[in-house]
Image (cartoon, rainbow, N blue to C red):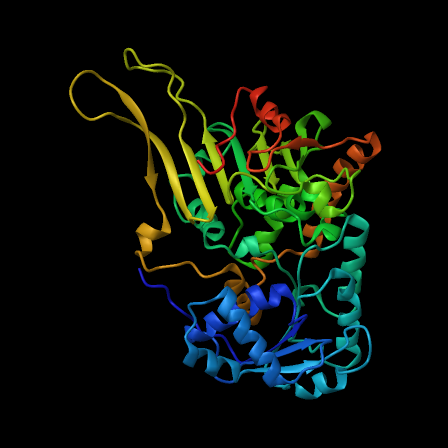
Amino acid sequence: MVSRVIPVQPFDLVLFGATGDLAQRKILPGLYHRFEVEQMPDDARIIATARSSMDTEQFRAQILASMKEFAPGFKQDVLDQFLQHVEYIPVDALGESGWSELSAALRPDVVRAFYLSVGPSLFPGIAQRLSDHKMASPDSRIVVEKPFGHDLASAKALNEGLRACFEEHQIYRIDHYLGKETVQNLMALRFANSLFEPLWNSTHVDHVQITVAETVGVDGRGAYYDQSGAMRDMIQNHLVQLLCLTAMEPPSKFSPNAVRDEKVKVIEALEPVSPADIARGQYRADKGGDGYTDHVGNADSRTESYIALKVHLGNWRWAGVPFYLRTGKRLRARESEIAVFFRDPPHTIFPNVGPLRGNVLVIRLQPDEGITLRTTIKDPGPGGFRLSDVSLDMSFADALGEDASAPDAYERLVMDVIRGDQTLFMRGDEAEAAWAWVDPIVEGWEDRGDRPSLYDQGSSGPEDALMLMHRDGRRWRQIGG
């Protein structure tokens, strides 16, 4: 199977925070790869901005160093051509220096995209200066990174600040999980095939598990993380978005607002979560290094590095079906997946065979992107009728060949911005609805003074999370299994 590359129209992409980690690690290498496959037109321009005083050649040298570290398979001749499309203009995001030079550098007849790879506190000020300096044209787009607020009140304030200068259709709230090929394939699996959708409901589905496990800790970003925690940092955006795509109704058409309308309905259907259905944890120190409290520099921290939730949707399709969400740091393996557990067969016809297990559809998001379906088959050979569970593998490696690799999520999403396609981006009311559900949960454990349970680094999380499933007669899928 050969992927088809559709070139985008000419553009000026202004990258704020261009010297930062995200820009150097993901955004600029992603743009290089889109240039390498000839998706970027010859007259595309990337205008990098930051407070650092340097010239374009110095910034290009910085990109080269980043490519060697984060994209070592680059081709030097292609990179040399790509760098000719990059220029650097020092700009003070909250001051006045550099804005006139930036305005003069933009062309009037191409798409303008402003990518704010900076902290959310800078969003309204940058948006206002883009408006004041007449750079926010009717066809321009502004891209903002998570975290989109710290709670409902701050999310509303950010939305108001952005909407004062840009229309909603110009605002792109990016969540890189939605750019992953397998996440998009979840929609194709459901809505482009007649096999699963008739079974995608409480009649046939027993429960759903959504897991985002990480092996890294919070060292290096402890100050930010201790004010956020796993609930705000991961559940409110990434896992809620995965839940939406798993549980949403079929949209009337594949258009940005039709898809996002259905996602908002899922968030609004989320029921309040009981304290008994929450498990929070912190990774403890071990022989090999420090623990969470050491990394954040706060021995009395009550912020969670792990959280598991049992949630329900109050609608007809999913009535009575629990969705189990979990995410954490310093776990056994780096793994993200959605697992849909179908109900067990109601009756066993085979002699000397115990109860049969239901099928499980697993959508793997990382690191090995693909889809598998657990089925029960007869063991080959004579000597009785024996059954075994095997997986039907629908991985990208099999479908696309050994040399195929899915592009990074940022590559897809940045090109969607240029195309003006908001399908894979959060709408303002969507972000606010997610915070409206999250805030009471966080306020509840803060009011109660709950402390997270400790768990070993390299484990699957705290015992509380295991009990969350065991009391329902279920088990988590093994992380790294």
